Image (tube, rainbow, N blue to C red):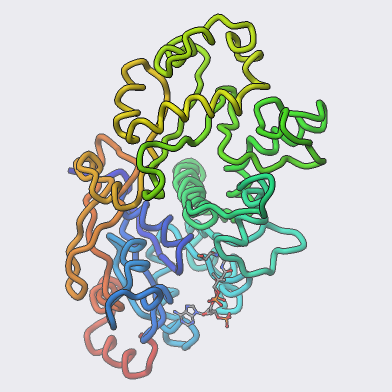
Length: 415
Ligand code: CAO
């Protein structure tokens, strides 16, 4: 069966997490992704957080499926020529080097345009143009600069970063959308273009609702769905809202049976307005369905703390899956707090290909997250990540180099 991006060739000059997330998605959609790495070392994540000595780490393998790996020294003059040949052959160059690194290598936008005017050059950087544009950035820096950390955590504690890699993988997703959009526009214009996804911008995009709240706070001085109302005070900026749902339907994380020993024996419970009477019935507080202090969403807002305490008295009598089963019968929105162990073992995620077992020649079998985006006409087959330089000869031959030339370039240290 054909793939959505069949025929698209990507020169993958990415490393660590943000860029590789993007090119892995493109590979899953069918693009031929040629990862260019430094000879001898490769992407630094190959050796980071290793769980098996001398074997590509899970950090690397889980971000580089379905790609080919070639090693080129792009600072060697002959290596540069090989890269030039690749630029002429590819549709997209994706990179997430520190600001200016590609230019220092000699591959400015102008030079790339000369080599291939149809080339799309897609970059992840920490910041867009401005005071911080020259800074190197990692995940948590982006979470802090993009508004996630200041709005995450509890009011009486410090800012908190989230486990979801919204700075790296989130920006990789943004970049992938930019690339396919630019490819689409190229079908009309015939021209390439530059695509930039700054990590600060990507995180802020995901924190959009918090900028909404900043303006609501400035206008009204309060926000009734936040736990600070009516239990505390608001300052000038959007506060940390703990586990409040942040939407129009109040929610909170509640203890379930076993919470004393199991750190994940919790459920997220939403007091959705249309099912309020059912919630009252389930927890044995039938009188709240008509009581003037509890009957309407507006009346409930000042009492949310007490309401969740009462619901928790009920959830603590059930384990999180029992509670979910009972609440689902009444269409009450809720969700168990699932541990990574529970997710890894969940059969339905294996069935859909969201969790996949992959075999690797040096590491053996391991689990990975498959393609979270399912296309009905372009199914994803997750293939193991490449060994360092595994495809150098193959790609060089495709570029037209003879075995003798390949051997000479290898001796010169260019590949
Ligand atoms: N051959 C020769 N040289 C190569 C090469 C190759 N195949 N591939 C890379 N290099 C060189 C680059 O040219 C660069 O050299 P110069 O500094 O002399 O110009 C050098 O390797 C390293 O590049 P770098 O500065 O990007 O790497 P770093 O480890 O110091 O920084 C990071 C890493 C992530 C902080 C930085 O790349 C960055 O800020 N990237 C943009 C934001 C980003 O993507 N961050 C997310 C990372 S995931 O958490």
